[in-house]
Amino acid sequence: MLEQQEAESPERTRSSSLVTDVVLYTLARFGMLAVAIAALMLFGVPLLVAAAVAVVLVMPLSMLVFGTLRRRVASGMAERAAERRARRDELRAQLRGDRDADES
Figure (spheres, rainbow, N blue to C red):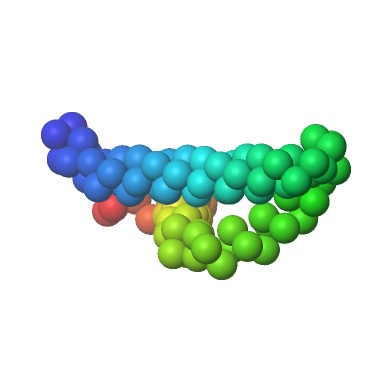
C-alpha cells in the first residue's frame, strides 16, 4: 500500500503542476484580453466592438507572448495523455490475460 502511495506522489506533483500551468495560462490570456478591451475603450470604442476586436487581437498575440507557458501546458498534457494511454494498454493486456496484475 505504501509503495503505491509513493509511486503516485510524482504523478500527483505533475498533475498539480499541469493544473497550475493551465490556470496561469488561462488567467494570463484573460488578463491580456481585459487590458486590450480597456485600452480600446479609452479611445472611445464601444464595449462590444472593443471586446470583439480584442479577442481577435489577443488570440495570436498571447500565443507569442506566453509561448513558454503554452509549451509547458502542451507538454504536460502530452505526458498525461501518454501515461493514461500506457495504463489503458496495461489494463487491456491484463483483461486479455497477456499479463498478470502482479507483474506490474
